Image (cartoon, rainbow, N blue to C red; front, side, top):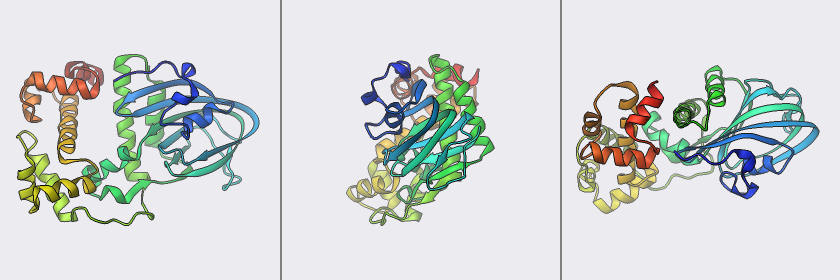
Length: 305
């Protein structure tokens, strides 16, 4: 996990995900970026404060998804297409990467943003919902209430993002939020014609086979046999339907299992490595540190403590 400098020190052109980003739009207005952190896994979190008599804010296809949670104020801020609907503490907004919106901002606002990419959302569709990842996106929702998500957002805001352990806990909480959003605010895309890819039955068969054989060495030929396809066609269709090539998907599943075992069991690291298909504890530690940013033992200490 790599922490960036405090948000106030960031140049506007270095804000997350480019010049069209929500972070850049706010940074170019009268909003004050109180805190900012990269959480690892290309997730970012920020806390903002705005004090203004009245100002218009326009978001134009930022290219990344945003979850917004009001921590304080917002009582006179409204989206222009929804006049008379105002913000308030614990109220949430979800802004998909391709959305466009105009807002009238008035008075005091203190709010938290979680920034993430479409692939964070869609790759969960296969594993958690058994859905085709191309068919789902984040809903465009303004001022809705969800007590569990709001509580997790408050936990994100309360963590010390400069502390390595706190940053790891924030990463874990952010992933919990994404899982809840997938279930509560995931909607079917209407602008994508699904062509190619694996059938639902084949995708499910491959997913279940990989899950039950993570402790073993898996090959493309073996997976092709499960899918009854050539290696060439499986590699191409797997990426279309899973959002990642086979090797990257398997690596991701191994890492997720390792995180779960470290978080929920007291298994020795050598046993965790074996359960997740790593050659040995050293290989596991190297891969885990490469992906998460800390050693497995440090991760376990941070998220279990």
